[in-house]
Image (cartoon, rainbow, N blue to C red; front, side, top):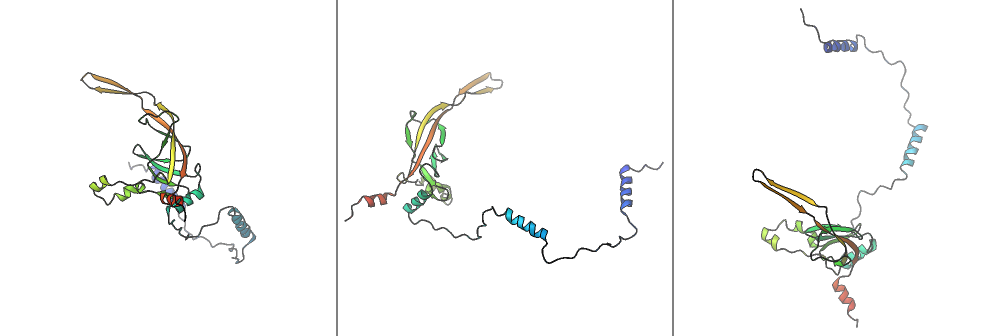
Length: 233
């Protein structure tokens, strides 16, 4: 008895037979519409609607923008920062605390592990390791901000002995106010050794200190302050 054809093969044959044609397709009876060089009313209305939709967008910037010149002195750089921001708005600093870099703005709340020695709530602390200060378009960086790039071409001994300077305190000044000393919820860690009868539970509460960032004040270079203090003859 011959094998019975599968259903899929029979469907495939039917679909092929339906697609095969013996006579060529007839030519089109209706001619195509003529091509007009002048735009029609529909195209003009569509173009006007397109331009009206793009009217609220800002203008396109030129491909080549003029390069901004760098300030020639520290005092001019500080004046650029002061023209674009204030001590309580529009400024930021990068500071090193507990071997980590933090981005701080005025009135931010910073949470750190408990500071030693313990400071009472309400006391103020001065930031001494500020590596960068800036606004929306301008920034002043110290060598410590690019320490990783400067250490690439050094050997291991130079990396250990090299010390990069931060921004002096007379240029940038920011204070932190101690808000409170708190602790995290209780953490229980179970330590156990198999077949030794050793089982121990360790309880721990991590302490934290919350600080509020104050205003970021910009000063003047020390040389300029001395020149202004000297009396003129």
